[in-house]
Image 1 (cartoon, rainbow, N blue to C red):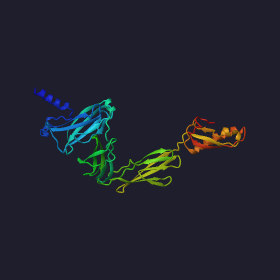
Image 2 (cartoon, helix red, strand yellow):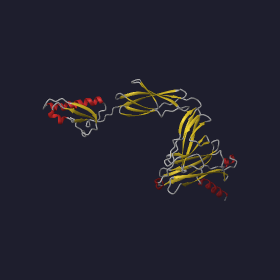
Image 3 (cartoon, helix red, strand yellow):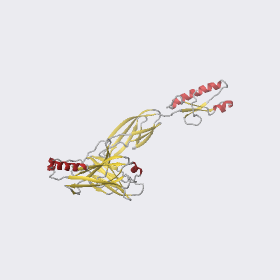
Image 4 (spheres, rainbow, N blue to C red):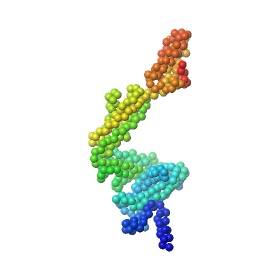
Length: 382
């Protein structure tokens, strides 16, 4: 009989979604205290994907609320992993974006970071719920500046399409702040999670988290850049450069082919011709530490299909036939440099002129243009 009661008790403890099973040794080490975390949830309204969660933490069956416990919430999908982190409070909100079954897990830890208990529930979102999403704010965290262990966070770019954002709530190292912009001094070097929740004038909420690395010692910046080419024009973006101990104060660009320089996180450079070019970026941190990165950038004129348009004829008899006569390289493929296009066009016009001079001497001029003019819609290569 006692064995059956023990089995029933263990079944009751595990059926609620708790992930912690305490054996006799663990119970004795915890001096008989059995912590329990649980939560309930409710949709904002019928067929709404916006859910409200209500967490409860108890010890030995009695609800227990204290300032030195922290709630950690995650939303995940099997096989995909964690997709969201909710605001670290007892009663967060979350709006699901796609039809699926999600696992929502709450973990409670103490002031030392030790996990006290965790609990999860699976929530299935239907297509009907996704069809009627609730308009909520969007919380945005920006790191305005870093200076050693001092970081300034900015939430002013958070948005809400239906009205104003009336409340900001930061949680940084367990401290709560209620201003849109907040400066914080971290206790020591390391990586920290920072959470921001914004609330709109109609009570809807949204939260987001980010991580920040801080260092009390000066670090070497990381220089990096991406680029997008359009013919011979290249747009450079150095926003992927970073530094831990301070902001990057300068982004210095150098182009060896013409010895030109530029400064800025985003710049545009026009190269003289199709070729591969060396590009140097040097980032300089707030402490004056430099880091250089050199990449090779290839550009092409990318003329696509060129067109040779005949402009004039030397004899009025043939002027109506010659003017507007054109040749394209469609059947031959793209000509990607101006010099190649001129060579090809010259050969085409010479062939045409040779045909004309069999009837009457003719002098022709031509113009090279990119394909797209209305008079050359099909290949007309001699």
